[in-house]
Length: 429
Image (tube, rainbow, N blue to C red; front, side, top):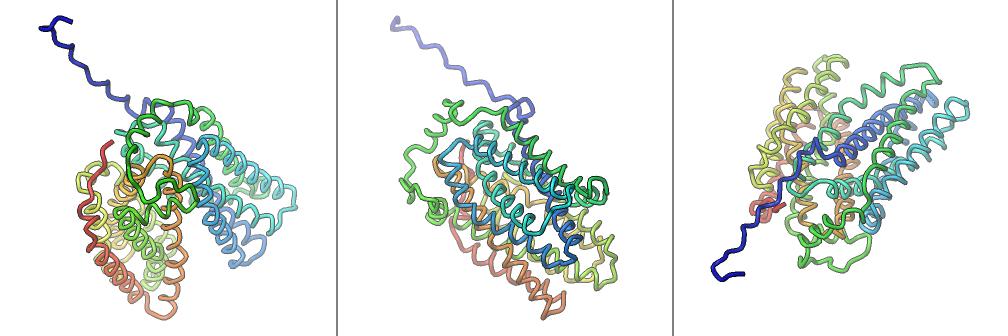
């Protein structure tokens, strides 16, 4: 090259196509949405079926308990599997098993040989399947979406989760009311949803099919010094979260909020019943309130202009006065309006936790860290539900609601002293 010549300018790489043109992401999203809706339908249909079979609410609750135990017991092994093996193959095997288990329930119901022990075994296996799919799907999502579009993809994933949570119970109850096939229609729907997820996942490339993306991700996490470097055990995710000051502080805050918030519905239902509100109006009011978790999805990017720790602390702090105001006799629509406003911010917080979990974690430990998140959040559910029941047993409903507000204020106050949360910044793509 002549000394006076200059090298031609290097043009920046073209931006990735929008997600609606990303066929891999769309296939994964369709499969995840269908499967999640099927699970939400089954969560209503199984207790209804057991109530009809046994006339025992306790046995209906036993099914949910067995399912939860199966999910918790499988969480750590599932995270380890997702880190060791191709997440696509894990999902294919898991969805096949869940589809076969549900098909067996359908056959037993139609054939008249369905029993409670069979249903409990199915519940345990479905819980294991749910735990196995969760970290594998998160890793697969990170494979098919460019890093700069991860937040947008996770925001769309909130549509799947929150939409299924809203539509599933109503759809499950409606499908169970159909007498055809001995009330097996909701279980047929769930089995088909697993088969759809199986087929859409089969269209995706495996882990080894995208070496360039894996190399980029390896470069992104290369050189990170972590307390769990070289840790190949199932507990590596828990150790990593606890050793990372930011992730530890974020998970403590979210776990406290989830433990307190999980009993909110029960106490609110009792409060509205004491105000003479009918069951139909209570259900409608809760549906209106939880629409906030859908309406809040388009404002995720706006809220993410705040630093992640500030977003988490301010959102959970906002819940304290809302919990306190819900103790007042506001009627169904006043309570629904307060909850609607509170839930507008929750999708942004959920996406923030997922983004931090992915970006702060080395690639070879992301599955186990996702499993650690799932366990730490899920452990608060039985504690919160049992605690709310005890509060209602010994206190008026208004006092129980104020107690939730007081516990949440203590938790938020404790977490607000953590400097890591205040200093947290969004990781680069």
